[in-house]
Structures are given as C-alpha cells and as structure tokens.
Image (cartoon, rainbow, N blue to C red; front, side):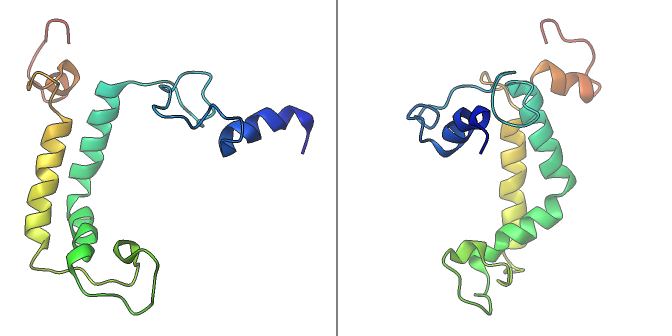
Amino acid sequence: MHPDGEPVAAALSGSDGASWRLPLAPLSATSLEPYAPGDAPPRDTLEAAARLVSNHAAVARFASRGVGSVGSRSVSAPLSDPTATPDDAAVPHVDAALRLVAHALLQSSDGHAPGAVKARAGWGRVEGG
C-alpha cells in the first residue's frame, strides 16, 4: 500500500481509534463516504420515501420472507436467506406497515410535511419551507 493510503485505510477499518466511535460524525464534504455531499435530512428522507413507495410491492414481498418458509440452504442469518419464500398472506400487512414508514419519513419533527414535500405534491408555496 502506498503511504498516502494508510490514513484512509486506518479510518475505514477503525484501527485509527477514532473513526468508528459512536455517535458517528455527520457526513460532510470531507467524509470518506463516496459521493457524500453532506447531510440533507429533508432531501434524504424524501428520497427514501419515494424509493420505498415506487417499489412497495417488491419491498413488501421481500420483507415478508421473515414470516415465510425457510429456504433450501442453511444460512447464518435466517432473515437474509435468499432462498426463503415469502408468506403471501403477510404481504398486505407488511405493505401497510411500510406505508406507515413512508408516511413517517415524510413528516417533520412537528408532525407536518416539510416544505420540499409540499412543493413536490403541488401544495403551493410554503413559507420557510
């Protein structure tokens, strides 16, 4: 390894004694995370909710594997078994729970939709939002 890479390797592995201490520092322009423009919670939660909603059927079916049938091969983490079969009866219930998750992502700490969500939904101009 090139000597210039040693501090980065130590930070990634945690052997520097500082980079993996909780709570982790917020992302910034100097973070080692690739393509990290920094923390932007309103944008990040909006994107997470949009991705969840746009792919809700597949996510609900995937998440229903936890209550489905065990897969054909032995794995150390049963909920991550790629061969597990979802419980089709659970899918609508899991979908409903995931809709609540999406709703929670779209709420600000005061229980109202943030300005970015209102603007995207066509709710008009929002002061301070």
